[in-house]
Amino acid sequence: MLNIKKNSHIEIYFLLLLISLIFYMKNPLSHWLEGEYENIYFIHNTILTANSITPDPIDYPGNSSFSINSIYLKIISLFDKALIINLDDIIKSTDPTQNFNKIFYYLKILQLFYFYISFIFFYKILGYFIKNNKVAFSLTILLLISNESLDNIQRYRFDFESLTFYLISTFFLIYSLKTKQKILSIFISSFFLCMSIFSKIIILPLFLIIPIFIYFRNNNKLLFFFKDFFLDKKLIIIFFILNFLMIVFSFIYKYNLIVIISNNLIYLSFLFFYSKYFEKLVGRNNHSFLLIWILGIVFGIIFMYSQALNFQKILFVSSPYLIFENHFTSIGNFSLEKILTIFKNINFNFLEISLLITSIYLIIFKKKFISYSNLYLFIIYFLYKIILSSKGSAYLNIFPIFTLLMLISLNLKEIKNHFLVYIFVIVNVVLNFNSITSNEYNQRIDNNELCILKEINKEDFIALDKNKFFLLYYAPKFSEYDFIKKLC
Image 1 (tube, rainbow, N blue to C red):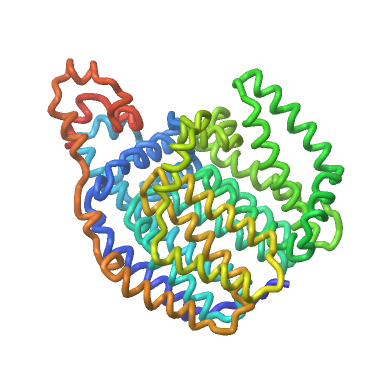
Image 2: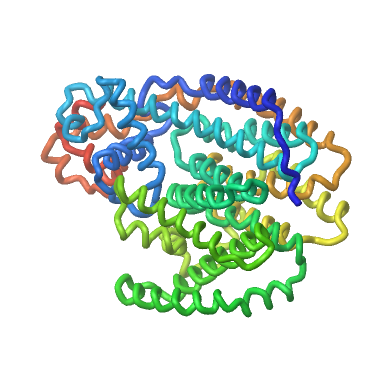
């Protein structure tokens, strides 16, 4: 069984204090474009959602975050009467910059709350697998002071929000093993699974970590898995129903074969491993938990639909390959040269190398067998590294570094010398001290592209190619000439 126990309140209070300190050191919270011009995209689509308008771009979901943000701002506006969230009123306002500064400030405070939640739940999840509370706490601190977390805490992005929803979902999934309120825990878990995927779909592989770990811990035989999977009667029925629906959609939306294959692999894998996990809860085949789990996902979609979500986006997110293909348009004509270029772009920092070496040491020298759950974690770690290597941003690497920490936590109980974890923390505090304390990133106001648009006369502005300007493409409601003149 998992090691379910209570965690120290002192350690949680210390976490909250440290997160607050780092957050306020790195975020001046003075201007809506501080640090990154892409803040426009997130603020624009939050406002659209608050006005029940579905954001146009479908290549970056974010719908769950936009939905939560819109409700959050509506609540704030009840107390702060100066806050304008009505789109028409914003366009007509004489000083929209001041209003955007307020919206940015409130959204960053919400981001701080996400950081509180994420690290508390991460600490609690580690406590289920690691018997030593101090080691679990040290690994949590290690994630907090990593370059990947530090980069996320100073940007306004949805990547960490997606990870936060994942951690909430995973905590309640594990907690369902102990609590008598299993139905409620499973429902909350699947609801936040939906929230996480609709925020950033790259999170998807992480959701199989715990179900796969539980499954292969009891039966670590690949032959048994294949028999269990391919001879599962309910999966066979679901397979035919699923493919019938996908064939219908393929005629309407031009699905190709690879989309159908990838959807089969994802849907059937989730249904199989989660159904086996729920069987573990009751010790027998019980479909009611799986139905509650599906109901939680459906409720999440209904929640987002009530704010601003359309069927096209639901269909897009439900076929992850389409998003992958959208980000990597040349995926269909890979050459050996392109593959080598991708591998050359993969970078490993000191923390990653240390965690990789530790993971290999724990698995090979401290265990008599290699679990297939460990193999799965290694695969998704390197897949993340390959996929994200072309992006070149540290905040995206939060997913691979998190995968490595989960890999270690699932195997750390076998090691007696916990001092290795403490050394990691001390060394990384020293190496990342400047990164922890610096706020240079958010000291700059990245508004050059906005100011350039302001200098163009109206005739030339109307003739501009919208695809070549971030504001014109990603924030069309803010792209009226007279409104831009008021922004910069």
